Length: 436
Image (cartoon, rainbow, N blue to C red; front, side, top):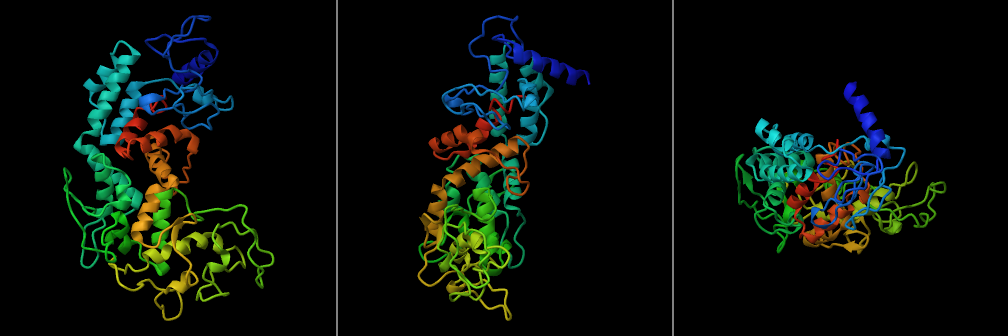
C-alpha cells in the first residue's frame, strides 16, 4: 500500500514537474527548474530514434504522439493515468529480461552492478551489456526453440512414419539466434531441418519434399508441419500459415468496397461480400465445386474462402505423413471421403495466390510472396513485442497490437536485412520495456 501511494504521489508530481535531473530521469528538479537535455519524458515515452530503434511508441497505449525516428515526444492521454506512474528501472527490467531471455533470474552481482551505477547513463549501459550477454548465452537458444515450439504448437521426435515435429521450431530458432534473414523461413533451399541437442544447432535437410525444382522451400515443405496439420482440403495448413505469419485469423483479406455477391436463390438477404476475390470463381453450387463455398444461408462462406481457397491448392499434395505426392492427397468431408481436385477449390483457370495482389502458382512463388508481405514482416516484430511485454499470443490470446506502436521497430527490422535477432534486442532495451 505504501508503495502504491508513493507511486500515485510520484505520478502526480511527474505530471506537474517541469524537468528531471540528468543523472536520474525519475528524480525531479525543483519546480520551475529548466529541463535537462536527454531526460526521458515523464508524461510519456520520448522517441529516441536513430540506432536505438525504440522510437516513441508509447508501448501499451493508444499512442497520441508522433512515433518513430524523429524523436518526437508522445504525450500520454489523460485517460491512461496508470501509465504516468511508470518510472525507469533498469534493475526491474533486468529481472524481467533475464527470465524471458534465459529462463532464470540475474545474479545478485549483476543486479547490484546496475543498481549501484552512479548515473542513469551508466545503469542503461550496464543493462544493455547484460542483455547482449544473455542473448549470446546457450540458454537463449533453448528459449528461442521453446518460443517457436509454442508458436507453431508442435514439438516431438520422429516416431514410425510420423516425421519430426522439431524441425520447423529448430529452423526458426536457429535463424534468429544466428542473425540470419527472417525471410529464409520462406525462401531457404537447404538446411531447413536442423537438429538441436540442447547446446548447438547442426545442419540438417529433410528428404526432398516438393515438386521438381522446389523440393525444399523453407518451412513450406517441412514434413512435420504438413503431417501435424493434415486435414480436409488442406485448410488446417492454410490456417497455420495465416495465423503464425500474418498474426490474424481468417478472413485473411478484406475489400470493404466489394460489391454484393451476385443474386443467388436463398442469398437475397446476405450481407456485403467483403473478400477481394471474384465470388463467382470460388468453388460452389454455381460451378464445379462439390462443396458449396458460395453458401450464404447464415454467413457468406466466401468471405473467408475467397483467400483460403486460393492458398489451399498449394498445400494439397502433402499427404497425412507430410510427404509431397504428385497428386492431391487431401480429402473432402463427403460420403466416401474422395480426394480433392482443383475445381473443388476454384473454377478451372483461376490462379492461386498468397493475396489477391500477390499471385503464387507454386510453393517457391508463395514463399517469395510471404517474404515480401508487409503484414508478415510486421507480424514477426509483433510476436517479439508481445513475448517481451507478456501480452500473450497475438492470435490465440487475442493480444492485438496497434501497428503504430511498433512502426519504428518494423522499419529498422527491414533496414537490417530482416535480422530478427536485432529486433529482439531492440525490444528488450526499448524505453517502454524498462518502465514500470
